[in-house]
Image 1 (cartoon, helix red, strand yellow):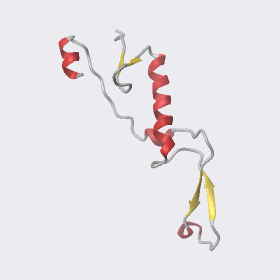
Image 2 (cartoon, one colour; image 1 turned 90 degrees about the horizontal axis):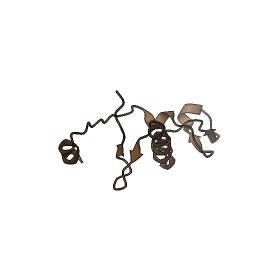
Image 3 (cartoon, rainbow, N blue to C red; image 1 turned 30 degrees about the horizontal axis):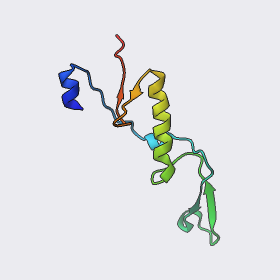
Image 4 (tube, helix red, strand yellow; image 1 turned 90 degrees about the vertical axis):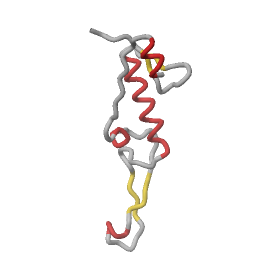
Length: 92
């Protein structure tokens, strides 16, 4: 990809979104146990998650869909070879 971009004199941008997975809304209801050390109770308690947390299987997909929609709003198009690579026109 880098070689092709260099040959065609294209500009490449890459970035990292900090805490991306922690800012996503959940699509489905997910409950998790609360540690007894936190509740200081002998009874099992659960919490309903309102936002995503790391290690949930769904979080990567939710983030990818949200980011895909964001890029498409700016007329970026995913590559047919690698859906994680987007191309678009540079606005001056």
